[in-house]
Structures are given as structure tokens and as C-alpha cells.
Length: 125
Image (spheres, rainbow, N blue to C red):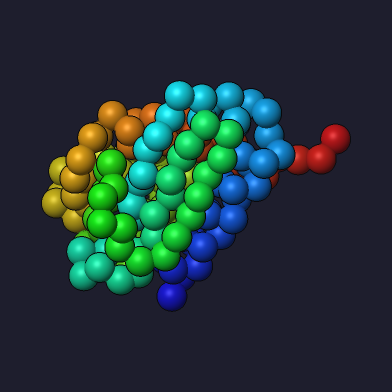
């Protein structure tokens, strides 16, 4: 349940950023990346389609993702995402342990990691 909620909120945040943040939109220029996050069992799953100027989001398994991030299970995925906010090596550790598997173009995952600075809401001035 927690992983599903994280994916839902992440989708909302990415769409909001594409609509309201010019610097984030600039990162989307010349991009056509369909990233899927899921558990190995296939549920929960959510996909994020990054296009110039916008992000589309959908639930479930997409038939043709550019890159897929598969976690061992939902509890592990949630724990890893919590750790990744403080330690970006959390994903690498999970891959080395075989608990996270990447299918498709891993370079797109590296590109996504550059977007992490936008995802946490900033403080109001």
C-alpha cells in the first residue's frame, strides 16, 4: 500500500513540475522516455512518460516501456525509496543484491536521477 501511494504522489508531483516549473520543463526537452516502476510480481506498477513539456502517468503495466525498474516486493521498494532520499547509493546496493532489476536503457534511469532535486517540495521564501 505504501509503495502504491508513493508512486501515485510521485506521478502527481512530476505532472505538477512539468506544468509549473520552467527549469524542470527544460529537462524534458528532446525527451521521449517511458519509465515503468513495478514489483517483480507486477503489482503495484505505474508508468511515467516524459515528453517535451509534459509528463503523462498511468497505472499498471505498460506494454512498451523504455526502461523498467522492478523491485523485489512493495515493502522493499518503499524502504529503498525512503533510503534513497538520503543515500543515492540505495539503488545501486539493491541492484548488486539482485533486489532491484533494470530492464531497457539504464542511461534513462541515470537521467531520471538528475530530476530528483526537483521532486522534494522547496521551502517558501
